[in-house]
Length: 126
Image 1 (tube, rainbow, N blue to C red):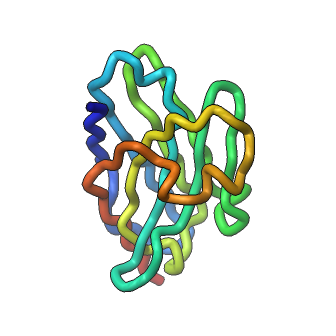
Image 2 (cartoon, helix red, strand yellow; image 1 turned 135 degrees about the vertical axis):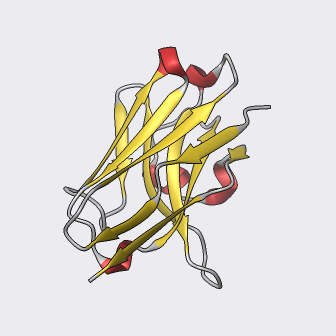
């Protein structure tokens, strides 16, 4: 198991920033691609970003505003979110993927992830 625990969500005014954290307890954390998704109730889970090794992938809607990083020594992945917009309001999930390729289309699909956290709420008000 690779239990994942997110934190760092909250309430922020549009234009502000938040940093999300995802802590994993599995020693093989470094072998997984670590990503973030978001979801509004009633809608499909939407890919946000992923990092595997030196490769990063971002959804077009967050490019230039969000940055994903990871610290393998701490088994932690981060999502720095800047210039937040009300449209970024969602429940954000951390996820781990054992897929080892480089196809964005594979990382963008929730079915290609093995483990999920419980989510952390981000609310952006105007």
